[in-house]
Structures are given as structure tokens and as C-alpha cells.
Image 1: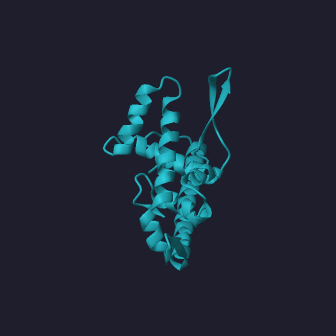
Image 2 (image 1 turned 180 degrees about the vertical axis):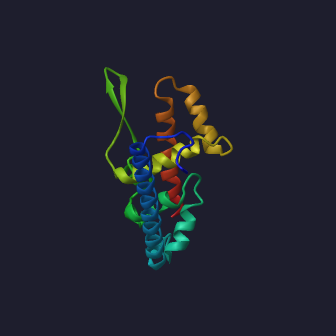
Image 3 (image 1 turned 90 degrees about the vertical axis):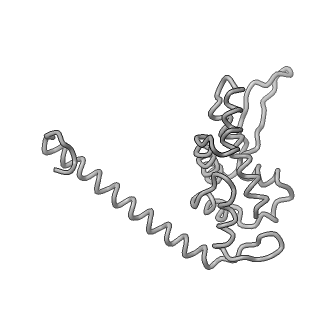
Length: 175
């Protein structure tokens, strides 16, 4: 009862109930850890421009960049913290793993490859970019959709990479 309208065998019901309990426990753990992260951010002083602001203010600034939510801003703060350590916006984008690299052979591009960089931050930026690409009411989402229309192979991936790069640049300039 409460799991399926179809009469399930007892072992299947037991398995589904166990999986539902596990999902609930995981969700509670994630909420608890997010609260701890929020509490920690409140104690931080983050350099923004030439001044120190509270972690809550810095996170609010980061969230003004389209596509950036609570987790993406948390990843940026945890991995980058102070953008002044980068010589240029390009260096910050490279650190985030969002700079494109091309393999060229005999004057022809044979492959687009992602360089190194911070894998966790890159993943967070890709998720933010994918969410933004699904939204056609956002200018960057429309821009990504137009990129997809001009690309034949791997359109979604290339558009997400380009949007992630734009998000990283936006985060650099906001902070």
C-alpha cells in the first residue's frame, strides 16, 4: 500500500520500500550537509574586488550570473575563493576546465578536447550550462540554441561547453 496500485509480490514490495527509505535518508543527509555549508559560508570573509564582504553577500553576487544556483556558487567559492590569484579571466576559465583546445593535423581540426582544470568545478558549470540551455527565455539559452543549430555533430555538448565558458567568465567578473 502506498507504493504501487498493482499487487506486487512481497519481495518486490520489500525491495521498493528499502529503496524509498534509502532515497529519503540520502535526501535528509544532503539537506543537512547543505545547511552546514550555508553556516560555514556565513562565517567567511570573501575578497570581492578590493574589499572583503561576507560569504553570504559574495554568494548572492555569484548567483546573479544566469544559470548559477546555490550549488554552483558554492563550488565556485570553494574552488576559486579569490579571483585575484588569476592573472586574467582566461586563466580563471582555464582553471575551471572550460577553455577549448583543438587538435590540428595537416591544417585541419580533427578533435575538440577539454584541457585539464578543476574537474568538480567544471562539472558544476556544465550542469548550470545544461539547465540554462533548456531555458529559451534566457538570452544565453537562446544563444546556446542558435549554436546548436549551426553545429552538426555534438551540438548539445558544444553548446553546453560554450555556455559553461560564459558562466565562468561571468563568475570571474562578478567576483
